[in-house]
Length: 140
Image (tube, rainbow, N blue to C red; front, side):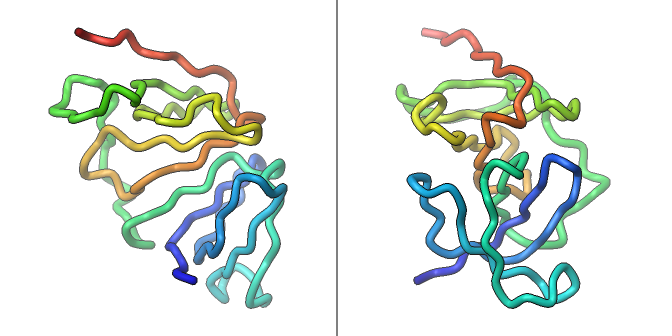
């Protein structure tokens, strides 16, 4: 099975980088293969309830100085099934994106960043780490 690059963020602020294999939403946990500097274990079982989000990334380095887009005034091609939304996490972070699956899964939902230069391809957000979700008005 194909492993995907991911950054796991816990509710307590801890971050672990590695690979996810067989990410299934009908389970309470998933298997994660961390970089050696994060864990001496070659694989970990991570429970969704301990997490803030799982970021499926393009690369592991990213750019800490990059300022993410915080507006929907971008050239954004979305399908009718996507909703624009702002996720407000309990820790104060805000995530601007679109989602096909908001409210569909018990444990969380996928968000696709609106910023084309964002290092994340998609983010699985855990419901219990969210303060609120603001659904944006649909323009017709």
